[in-house]
Image (cartoon, rainbow, N blue to C red):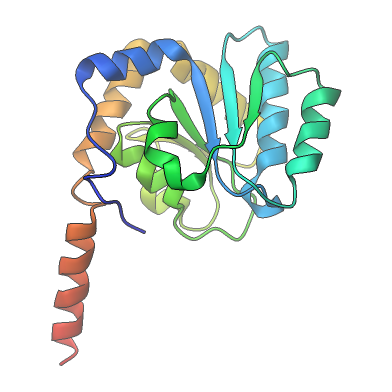
Amino acid sequence: NYVDLNVFPSPTPKRLLQRFRARKLLFLRRLEAPRGASFFIEVCRLLRDEGVTFSAEVCGSGSERQMIEVLVAKYRLEAYLVLSSGDLEDAAALADTATISVVPSQWSEGTSLSAVESIAQGIPVIATDVGGLPNVVISGFNGYICPSNTKQFADHIRELLDNENEYLRLAHNCLILRHVLSFERWTTELTRHLAARG
């Protein structure tokens, strides 16, 4: 996966601070079992029960959408979480409002486009230790990788929401990786690889 840097612009320092103060979590993925939407709902319930101030947006379509609606109602999370109908094609605009991007994959994950796009916009990512996610999210550098454990996932979110210096450090580190994740670099590496094969 790669990012068109023209579509995913680099934020200003002021914008990074605005994002931190928003305390908004974003799940921008297909609503299918491997992608961990129901896991994220459980994480939101834990955060709410622990008295954490936050908002969350689950954005995407898929076979689990109705189940997610049921869980949100069951746990009475309506005041905290919005299940939006935003299009994944509008990822840049949707992500720009987020403090943290969550990628709680449970299985069957290569390199998450959501994670790559978030990092390119300076949005720290908290992800599970599944598939290729640790190749994109460098734990403690541009986000955090943790096991598929709702308590540990929630703890990482809470710690980052409450620590402005740490948040801004991770956000700046995300921006350092913009070129590495770019379409330009991807095409250069692919061309070099094909030329080497003769």
